[in-house]
Length: 116
Image (tube, rainbow, N blue to C red):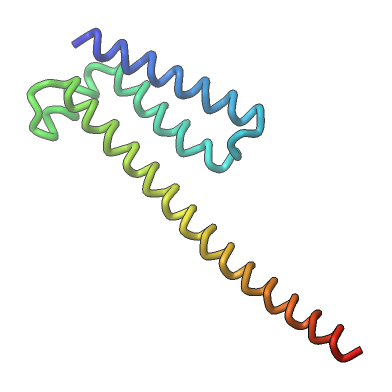
């Protein structure tokens, strides 16, 4: 049990460090890093707080607390991935709209050149 919790603690610290380094180097935008930092913080808190983890395991009806941690972490990361899927979908729609506007402007420019 302690090995898994210690591994989760190390994993969360590595994730926090990677996100902060990526923000500093401008590989990831700050507004997107918040989701990753929150997920890593939840992982860190749950892996270090045995009483909260035991309570959540009891609440979920799971006998093994580390298994409850893995399940909760999986759910938290699913929420993060869903959030990014929504963002990517919005960006794709915006990209399509921008491409259509550009095509209209190019058509109008071409029409103006033909009139001259």
